[in-house]
Image (cartoon, rainbow, N blue to C red):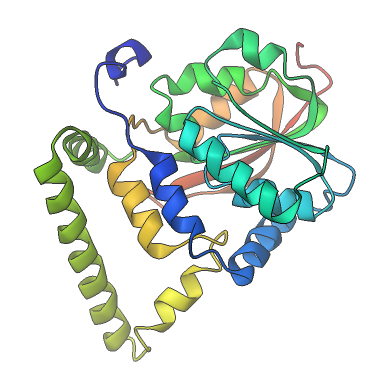
Length: 276
């Protein structure tokens, strides 16, 4: 995999631009689904301090705030920061318990100065930093003793990981390839999904309605995020588990991609034996 120094010289995906388009069509149903997903993994957030590292659209920061948490959001991408601020302005314009800023998880000094949080949340972010393993280390810095760390990391596949690295790199470096990959995978995924639903005697439109229940996200903007998301790194579930086990973290909950290239999700708790 490339180092963070390598990817500085290659074009990164405009995550914030994609999220801005997503927010134009944000619905109450998507917000409620995001709240339900956080509750399923993290339980009651009322009164908890919640760090959203890589806030993206801001929907999960918003969900945590609606659930009663004190929220601190940051993102490397200025447009993503703007998206999160737009949500705060729409729903909690004068609330001092939701802070938002631009920040970099790879900046150790920045992470050390954030303070300590009950929950550190980083879903599908750390594998896009250009130095995933350093990001996985630094993300623990602002976590309180016995706090909860909830992360999602792309799963490694022997051949498909290499293929998707190529797709993502060419998507971001060549405008012709960007349009090609977008059109190709919109048609491919739509056709594949429709055929599967017809064979299973299901209504193809149900797929799109049900998808919004997946963390409150959008099937189209998630597709663009997936095709274009670069830098791009992956890890096997056991690699993430071993990494945090050596740091005395306790795995409380796990969801795996079942061999696919989706995200494996992990909920760790910070043992009292962990070093500060």
